[in-house]
Length: 178
Image (cartoon, rainbow, N blue to C red; front, side):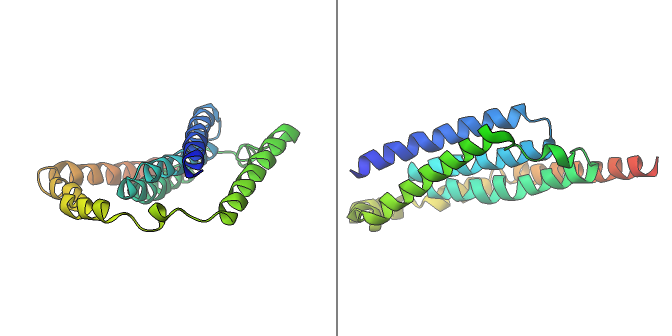
């Protein structure tokens, strides 16, 4: 039974990621597009967690869905590119019907999972897996190269983001002065 839920959730989050990515590239409003991109990031984070890459899933949410999208939305709002009428993507009866069906499916899945008991392998990993993770030192294998040999690239990336924000502020102020 847990294998069915795993497969169902894997395909569900994959489908959500693909549909959100298609909605991201088809939106006229940059604000609506950014919100769909956040949805893609959350779906990808869920897939990473399901593949036992918990650290990558958390980093996906914190770095991409959190920090990068906040910066992106800040720049979009600063440049005033979006029209408030275009932000709502769920318009008309078909959009509301689709949103309602997705909501009902998620509620049904939560209710099914709440009635069933979690398998012991999900509650506590086997000792062999815990020992393998300790021996692997998963966080150390990511942190050592990131703050060692790739430190310059990491810092240059942060400087590029800072320059992009400053450039957006300069362009926004120039437009306001005109």
